[in-house]
Image 1 (cartoon, rainbow, N blue to C red):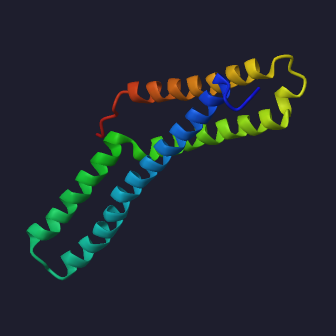
Image 2: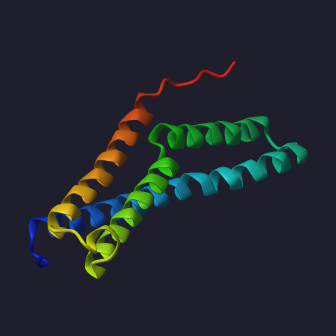
Length: 140
């Protein structure tokens, strides 16, 4: 199989997509989490210094907003899931290139690669859909 075969192009495209999406979600997770940590550390200091209660309360509100955005968009979960799928696709690519593992004795290595790549992508997609269909648990 050549590098310009549809199967290899699909594999490369998916590795690139999952890598970009993983990095995007990691960046947004950290952009929201770092301010939360810093603001949470400032609140007890502000309260101890008896700063304006509106300021101190506003910091708490800001933490809730940042955490709500993180929870709504699932940046950490997406980051981990997309990174895991990207690495699994890379692993599959390396096995195929080395003609190792399931490709060692396969009659049609390209067909096997296509099936295994699509299975990885389908599993990730099914998990993504299932996770979003879970009802939101209300805190009591």
